[in-house]
Length: 301
Image (cartoon, rainbow, N blue to C red):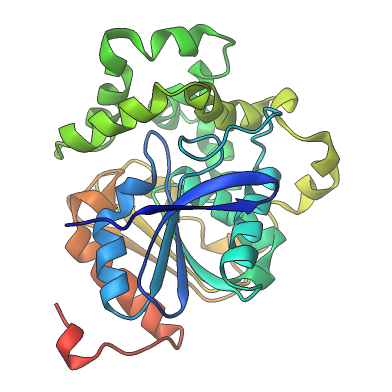
């Protein structure tokens, strides 16, 4: 499988790098942590072959996308990143979003704050952030999200994560997707995290969840609207073996528009890589239900 070359664009005052393939309605793929745009290799190829223009950016601060001059990683800022990317990449027209982990956490905010930018959304592996933060004190969820708390510490995670060739990253992938080996993919994630400023940037996302010093004070007025009712058609996916499924299965009340929840059996957190055939089938079905191009006979796989 050959991935397209990396391109770059200015959006929200920052230079973003992204992968792009295909033509047709825009589908924006948003990765999580610890991961990057290359996570979507199976989805890029599949969706592009079925009549979509697929764009997978590296998120704010994830090399080769630029590290911002101010360490602002609040969800309002991240939602603005996505809105601006859609505007510049799609001439102001709304796009579909497919997102996993932090990409999904950001997308919930985009759907609440900027619904005019989104035709439909698919969120994977992370519940609505209001539900996630509410359940963060449940013992089982504390165990699953221990890194949220660990990453609040100043400087310590920056010292711990690089030890023994980023063994902490290997641990997270094994813990979250225990039946799926990803040595080559994880190795390139480690190389990305070793780039100047990238590790601190990725940790900033977590710190901004609980700390005001990682939030842009100019966005204070938007925080109360960040977790408002969602009217954009949304599909939620989770691995059947992912503990997050316990929370995602109960989140329908956050959606005032069309909403569907599905679990992918025998998969964990990185479901789009663990079972790309099942995930791709659901993605394509969902996108076509939104009125997009039908599958041509010679495109079926």
